[in-house]
Amino acid sequence: MRRAPRLSPDAAAIIRGVSELLLDEPPAVLADQHDAVFASIREMFRSEPSLSAEVMASSRGHNLHWAASLLRDPGEPVAVNLSTEVVGIARDAFRLGVAHDLPAAYHAGKSALWRNWMRLAFTVSTAPAPLQEALDVAVGSLNRYIDDTLAALTELLESESAELTRGTHAQRFETVSLLLEGAPMTTERASERLGYRFDRRHTAVVLWMDPREPDPRALRRAAEAVGTATRARQVLSVIASSSSTWTWLANADRVEASALEAATAQFQGVRIAVGPDDTGVDGFRRSHLDAVEAQRLVQRLPTLRVATFADVQLVALATHDDVRARDFVSRSLGRLATADPELQSTLRTYIREQFNASRAARVLFTHRNTVLNRIQRAEAMLPAPLATNGLEIGVALEILHWMGPPPGTSDGPRA
Image 1 (cartoon, rainbow, N blue to C red):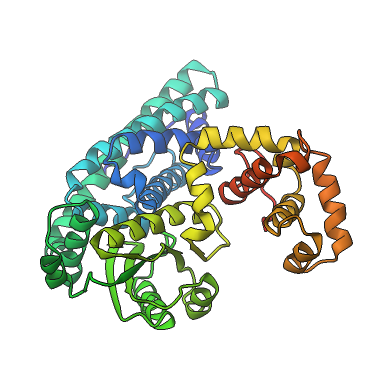
Image 2: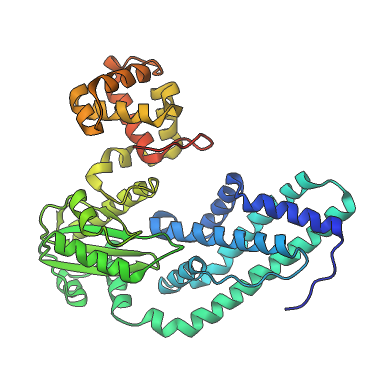
């Protein structure tokens, strides 16, 4: 790695100042970068929650690595970062046959990051000479870092190509993907390829982990535990990405979130979303799509490990447009939308329990008078009476529970 020209102290101070700002992970910077990356890649990376999370984790990892390196040595080249999250999404792109899209995604992310780097640089200093020097050094560093990373990933993927594209899991994933896309394939042919019968009742399950700390063995064993706990007649599992597994249960007993949580408690970090029962090839597909929709919402609540589509069905319908959903919450809840989460949770539970304070108190493990007191405080914040707007307020509280507080507000503990 060639040594960069010696930096002046003032230019080095500017680079360190911007690096410190980037290490604080400003939400606007990350949002701009993620938007740029997602706009440059296939729709599957936006719509499939695990892939989407892996893309964002990779971008975040690059930002932090590059900024931390410049903070330590502003004038030195930055070493390539082949961390778990960076390599994971690259491998997924290769398996999906779209590895050639990686350069476009990387350059889109680089352009967005550089726009924000320049903006931040002018908040650190306005001195023309050192600022120009800092900009020249930083853009050269970023360009080299991206080029070196792409070259390293290409070399790695080429060395692993046989392993990534051959074997039972690769073949299963290819067949399942065709079924989910609605490709013409006979039931007999699909059953033969997958060793799984489609003339049964199917329950789709998505299991996933943090893309920064995936554990394929834990995912596999958790999927097996789900099959055992539900007494499924047959279990089909495929590796969907470096941090997720898709599973189908044939003729399983009633699948309840509490039972699955108990059965998989030993697998730290594994999270589960379950689709509804359905039949045939179309049911196989529909149950999976609903499980993915549940996963999309569950990802917003990091403390929730297991959820079924039945838990989130109403919210899933109401949140396909985030902006309009947020507007609905704001209009329906008024000041309660940004109030103490304890008040929101109490009123949500009270409505879910058919406006019965005693039942709500049992669910919340608190006294009935405490519930009544919280409800009174919550009602005082609503823009319209609960008695005449219970449906709208209940839906708004469900959306708020699953989407979390609006960006820029405090995020206290949620029920």
